[in-house]
Image (cartoon, rainbow, N blue to C red; front, side, top):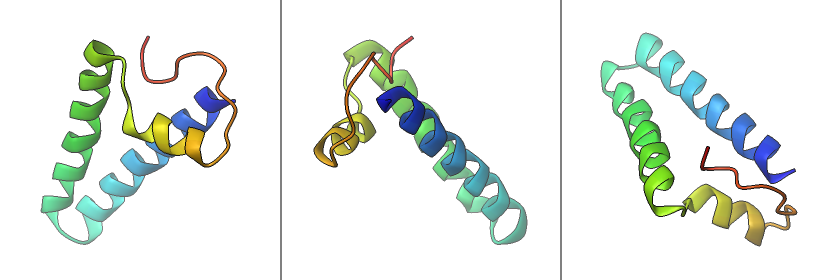
Length: 68
């Protein structure tokens, strides 16, 4: 279940940053960069802030959500 929430939230954040970049200001592109850097970082460290937040909110942990 955690994996599903993770993918939905990250996908929504990427889409939101693209919309904000297009219609508000091009500096919102840095938000997309931030998301990408965090995904790469989590692949090496096996730690993801979003996963930690979701677990504290009560989402049940199934499989690893930030690593491949």
